Length: 151
Length: 197
Ligand code: SF4
Ligand code: SF4
Ligand code: SF4
Image 1 (tube, each protein chain N blue to C red):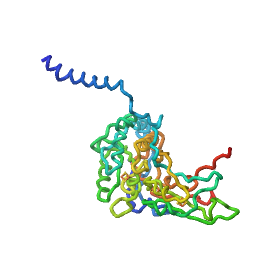
Image 2 (tube, each protein chain N blue to C red):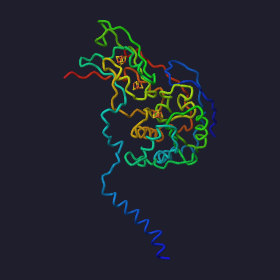
Image 3 (spheres, rainbow over the protein chains, first blue to last red):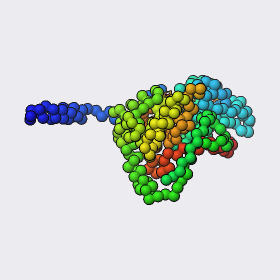
Image 4 (cartoon, rainbow over the protein chains, first blue to last red):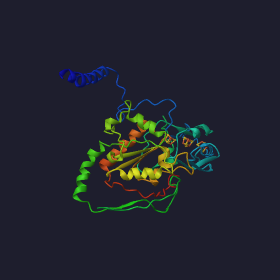
């Protein structure tokens, strides 16, 4: 009887604790996410950014090539001509409206590949979850990089 | 008892629509707050830290949902490690993957079987809006079938992105409205696009 108890109850418990004790010494693999963030891989693609030249002008020329390359059809571009009084980009044209539906986007990076001026890039900001569907329509103002302060 | 009126709306709500569109969705007619509901408000902090998700995945996003529970990201730090195989014991439904039109009634039935209070996380581009599959087979957004509380974009969202969604849901449960089971009106607001020019 007591032998049965030893074999069926105590032994499995001790084996279990033994495994726990063995693992205690090992390196911890868990990333304490909200407190620390893991290092993202070099080619990680998340939230888009519309970049600027060093002069502060927008790189985007409103050519809609990104919208054409997008497999999810989630980019919408409306372009207009630059004038000398109102200049947004160095070229002839600029984007008046630039919208990405982040919810439909699959973060494939095709838009980044298609862009002739390197305006749209996908960076590593992954915390995009939100409560409302309309919050995911990212407009040009939300995507544009802020003007860098001149040193 | 709060009364509930339910109508379903079918339109591709992922396409940007400006201005008024036809209203739809379930509407919970709010009643005066009873004592029981106030007690529930106090209990919601406890609920937020013991969200038991429902075990099911609809497509590739489920793989990332699984690795969210694994050792590297370890969802059990937030009390959500107990994935339940029956809707009767689950609090939160993580729609992980595209919802096909054939699956939509099943999804709704599982949702109806879950006890109140219940929440829904729409994980990934497909579940939230149809993603690349803008075609005849896929429901263009799970919010046309069940009320969604948190949308997590990505294809698939990485485990930390999903975890951020779960943290968002927790803060909604703790600080937000206690309007459970409410399907929001799918209505896009017109934004001032000209002002920034
Ligand atoms: S990452 Fe892909 S899906 Fe997203 S906007 Fe760019 S091309 Fe479209
Ligand atoms: S982001 Fe690039 S590809 Fe897209 S419209 Fe602007 S310049 Fe053209
Ligand atoms: S969002 Fe991407 S990973 Fe998720 S179900 Fe759709 S195709 Fe699969």
